[in-house]
Amino acid sequence: MTTPDTIRVRFFARLREELDTGELELPAGSAANAGDIARALAEKGGPWQQLAGDQPGLG
Image (tube, rainbow, N blue to C red):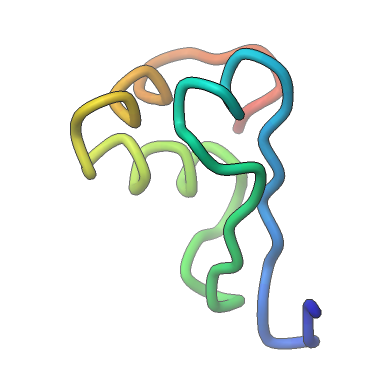
């Protein structure tokens, strides 16, 4: 369950399959926008790297 101090990030279709997860919960304030979240997740490496760079709908 998402609380006021968490952000739920959901992944659909291809990303859900490739990242092997449908959602993540992150602490609120850990990023200013969706682009910041994508960049932080991309730093995890592996399949998460595809979140780096310009993505439609992020930022």
